Length: 492
Image (tube, rainbow, N blue to C red):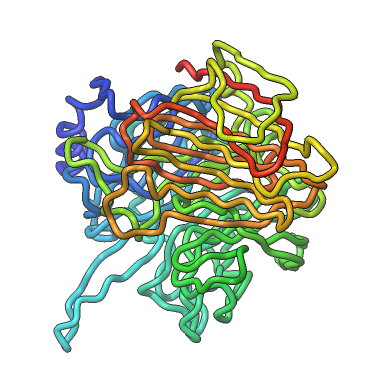
């Protein structure tokens, strides 16, 4: 039976489900109406891919969290479904926070999420308690388990915080269910806890899988844990990071750790770490193993520090990245847009061996919903000092991507992309030196800019605030460079 709270949310959002707002991106997930943030429950269910998300339908501000819901067969075209969860029980009365999902053998879909409730203590301080709950459903309607919460303060290790205990990621392996859950440890930094269950309902604490000890920020959010190309990957989203060179930036970030996994001992041996995305607008990613065995990731294409930058005329706020295929190559995690995006390419325009030694445009190379790849190399033995690709231009606006072969640094600057808030607009990051060669792929969807360097060795995500009529693309170089260009319109 649908609760009054969920019915209210579904009734409120109904008039927006079929409305085709021209402000929305063409193939990036947005909420039906109101605010969205973290992706949740990215999973396969009955042959389709379901994605839920943190959702406050009643305004474009963060509020009591619901779960919004979409599904897809190809990661590009998404069908809107009614809201799946609302805060409507004692276990989650103040919010249904992030979580995950999987399909059970009996055909039901299990959602595992963080339920939140607030209480005022004797000192009159309001405290937010977090614990894990589950719901079961058929892909549309979900019933919360009568035994909720399935994990609470009694299941925490000594020193674990019951105020920062959230974001379960569930999977099945070797006949058992496992879940990693974010927690704040006794030293006030983040940790990831491992739990195990034989049926998905009754859970037992196993161990602290990884402790941060203030190495990467403070509290870790939204853990994900999966095997990839013979290795094990742990992804976390730390808060309050300090910058480390050009690899990790300040504020909220996403860290990918790679190593080995001993399932019998429930032991993860971390060997190395890297940033997941080198842009500004990327947080709380979640992955799914596809029906054909790929690992696909999607993330909130936003940053908490920039979430006040909103279009006052739009009915929605927040979007997801393009889904990305993950792999490991030469010890690095790589990511590229899902291959299904290629099915929506039209109007191919190509150029070969174009000499770039000044600012220039090329006929047919423009757009704000496009897939553009540029391959650059030195034209002479003297090489070039920098190459620059500018997108979203109209004389007043524009964002540029600059590559300096001498330092092997890519710099992205969206200062002139319409933002009117005092926020970060620049990011720089190292790429692998290749004697002046670089490959830059740009995927744009109106107000989103996603950059993939050298076949996914680095990815960088940015929002643009300029009007979508700013569509010009230009190229420039100091020195002499040769480039090949391949551009498609994306028609969804």
